[in-house]
Figure (tube, rainbow, N blue to C red):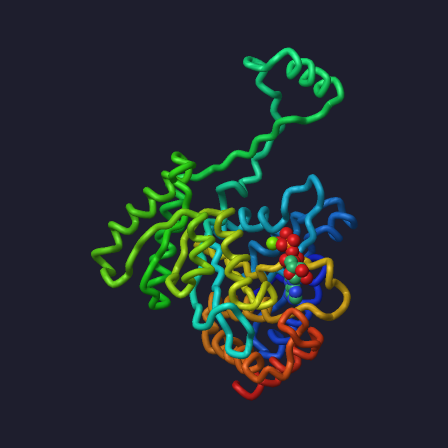
Length: 359
Ligand code: ATP
Ligand code: MG
C-alpha cells in the first residue's frame, strides 16, 4: 500500500493535523499513514528538531503532510531541512478569495510560486570580525573591548541564487500555467539593487520566457520589483495570475496574499519536486491560540486537497475544495479568525458532512 508520512509538529500544527486526518480518513483511500516527529517538542524529547527516521519515512512515502512547528533557538529549521532533503524545489501558494469570507477584494485568484531550495533561506550565516582599516581610535578600542567580552558586532548571511535553480523554477511556473490554464507570469525580484543574485534570477526568467513564448504565445510575461509588488498586491491584486520569485520574497508575499483573502487560516501550500511532494498550511504553530481548539483547520484541509491532486486523486481533491467552499458560503460556521465563534472540531465536522454529500 502507498504511504503518506504525517508530521503534526507543535502547537496548532497538532490540532489542524487531527482535523485534516479526520477528513482524509473519511475518504477511505488506499494509503497507510506513517506518523512521524519533528519540531520543538521533538527536540526536547530526543535532542533533534527532525530525526533521521522522519526524513527516511518522508523519502519513502508518496507524499508528506506537515502541520506546523515552533522554532528551536540556535537549531536549523526542520521544515527547511525537509524541503531540501526531499528536493521539493517549488513552493506553491494559491491566493484565492472565498464567497462568504470578508476580504479587502473579491475575485482574487493567483498563485505564488516560490523557489524553495536556495536564496536567503540557504541558512548560511556567520559571525565576522569588524573591518578595522578605516575605523577611528575610539572604534578600534570598542572593537577590542567587544572581542574581549566575546560580543558579536557583525553577522553575515549568504544569499545563494543559481542559474540552474532559477531556470528550473521559472520552467515550473510555465508548466503550471499551461496545466492550470493561467495566462500571465510575473517574475518578482530586486535586480536594481541586488544586481548579481537577482540579476541572474531575472535573466534566467527571460531566457525561459523566450523558449516558451513560441510554444505558448497566449501566456504573457512581465516582471516587477519586490517592493512595488508589495504595493500592487493591495492596489491591483486582480492583475496577478502567477508570481514566480525567490525564497524570502515568496515567503513574505504569500503572507501578504493570505492577509488579502481572509488570513492564514485559509492558506494552503504545496512543496513539489521531480519526485516528492510535501504539503503544509502556510501558518505557523500559532502559540497565541494553541490548546484552545480555535485554530482554523481549512488551510490544512486545502493542503490535503493539493496533496490529493499531486497523488492524482483529482476527484477527491476537487470535492474537498467544493466542500470547503460550500461551508464558507453558508456562513453558519466560522472560527474566530473568520469572525465567528466555532471550534476547530465544529468546522471539521461541517466539512466532513458536506464532503459526504458530495461523494
Ligand atoms: P512561523 O514563523 O512559524 O511562520 P508566525 O510567527 O508567522 O510563525 P503563525 O503561527 O503563523 O506565526 O501565526 C500568526 C498569526 O496568525 C497568529 O496571530 C495566529 O494566531 C494566527 N493563526 C495562524 N494559524 C492560524 C489558524 N490555523 N487559525 C487561526 N489563526 C491562525
Ligand atoms: Mg510566518
